[in-house]
Length: 118
Image (tube, rainbow, N blue to C red; front, side, top):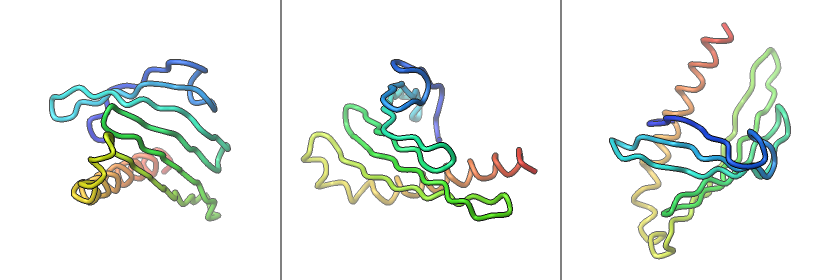
């Protein structure tokens, strides 16, 4: 992810249901912390988490679909709510840039995984 710096487990161990962690980012020189709470894990099938900052809360749902021949399709669903609720009125202004950045992040991940696998 753009600006990702590090990941620090808080409670429950690393990436187990109910565990929490802090993700640290450098957002154009501004340090940012994102709290992660793991909601669901099904190995090789699904990873669901809740990400939150003081200004937003986002549920992330990653589904891994076996396509055969060693291929996997990643389906990502994201629901974002801005805080305070009044900010949701302006959400349409940030939705497009957020989608573009997420698409870039996923393309970068795909390239890294394909390089490691091949």
